[in-house]
Length: 69
Image 1 (spheres, one colour):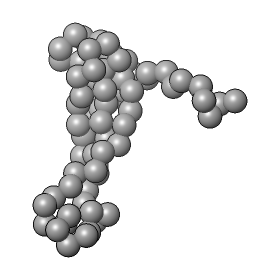
Image 2 (tube, helix red, strand yellow):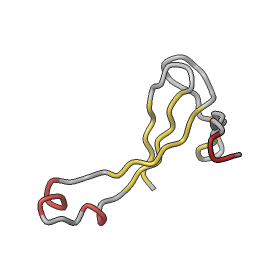
Image 3 (cartoon, rainbow, N blue to C red):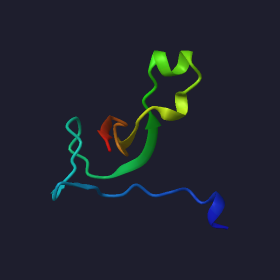
């Protein structure tokens, strides 16, 4: 059952260059998505309208690198 299998970290390219962790020099990352909430949108109940970012989490030291897009 694929639903419960643990995902493996992946290598990532950004603008044609291999992404490397600036802390430990690892090149394997887990991918996550994060919403960038603003207080104004939250106040008016419009959190869905905020931008989101792609996060790459180093599989060794868990340092997070954020990319808008």
